[in-house]
Each structure stands twice: as C-alpha cells, then as structure tokens.
Length: 282
Image (cartoon, rainbow, N blue to C red; front, side, top):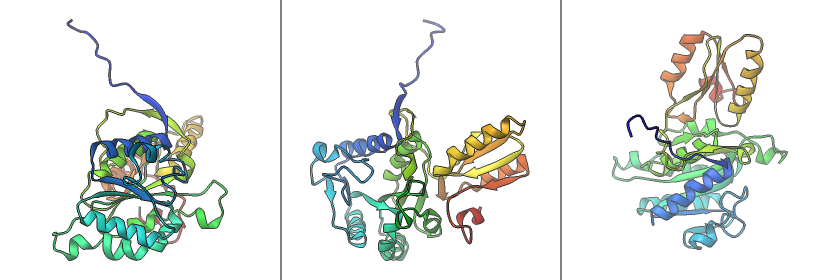
C-alpha cells in the first residue's frame, strides 16, 4: 500500500558480554576457519563468561583451552593466521598480554611489512582492560595506548553492546591483526543491538552527544562517565559534545578536529597513565 510504514530490523536488548558472544557465535557458525582459544575459554566459559556455552556448541577443536602461557598461545595464533585460519585469541586481562609482547611487536605487527606484503596475519586478539572491579594492581591496567603506539596493528575500544558486536565483526574481516580492548566494567552493561546490522567501520569515531561548549573526547569505559558529566553540565546550561573515538589506531583525526573546531575547547578522558599517554597524543 502507498505510504505504508515498514518496520526496521528488530532491536534486541543484550548485555555487552552477550553482544561479544553473539559476534563470536556468528563467526564460528559462518566460517570454518574461525576458532577461539585462550585461558579458560572452554569448560569454564571464559574469565568473564563471554564464551559460556560455545564449547558445548562448537566442540574442543573450535573452542580451545590453552596453558597459562600467553607468549605460546598468541604465537600459535599468529602461526594459524599465517596458515590461512582466522584465530580469535583471548587474553584474560591486558596485564597478561605483556608476556606476549615479543610475539606482538616482532611478529604479528611486522611480518606483512618484512615480507613485502606477501604474508597476512588475520588475527583478532581480545582482552579485558580497565580498573574499577577491585581486582588489584596486576589486573587493572589500561594499556591500550601502548598498543596504539605499534604500527602494523589496529586497536578498537568498544563502549556499547552494539559496538562490542559490530567492531568485533569488523575485526574478523580485517586482513591484519586487530586488538579489541573490552573494559571489564562494561560486561554487565545492557543496550539495544541489531543482530542484522553490518559490521562497524574501524577508524570511525562517533558523536554520542552533540554540543557546542566543550568537547569531551574519550573511549571505552569512560564514555558512560563522560555522558553522565554532560547530563550534569546540561542542567547548568552547558552543552557538552561527547566524542567516542571507538578506535585508537587508526585514529579518526578529522572527527576530533571537527569537534574541537566547533567547541574551541577539549577535555580528553581516559584511564591510562598521564605521562606519554594516549590522551596526551590526542
């Protein structure tokens, strides 16, 4: 009928944890080259229960528990990617990724360039980052800025369930290593997700709230805090723009410049150390 309204795709309410699991399940179902490996991802269902149920659904060949040796299993992921597989490596927390830094910097990030483009490393590495869960000093760092320093890899930092799914989907389609930093305080956060939506675009920031008084530039676990601050300032008549970077490498520099050109003021918010931090880079 002329003028008939067509309903959009159904939006499903799910937690950040469930959104990541949804993307993992879809990847495992649709591509036989995809497999997940890491500490406790199988029988235990993951440290943060992201992979809960996937072992029963896909079996131990596709969902692999590994020894407590980050350098070993991340290196195995690099080798599998070189061999044509699509590995997803889960590192329990960002702190533990330091044990695999040699594999990351000297192999994952460099082999394409050292080979003159002959080798591709379609590797996805997921890890929890951030503080706020009272899990002590060795489980609470925010080192995503360190990884954004490394040429040859991409770094994404989803702040919402929709982005947790969409950016992971995009990472799985990338021909180069993509590191996904999931803030540990967000796993229980819920939001609406369109499971039929196309993957998000890596390297594109998003204005979460428009404004013209000051730009709050942030990402990941700090986006919600920035939005809360913007709500409080709005009560005083101050219109704050909240820009969610979503990707640290590549950085959407035009989006940052456009926001600051409008507001003429910028506040950068993250949980990293101040000296030589990603906030300082922005």
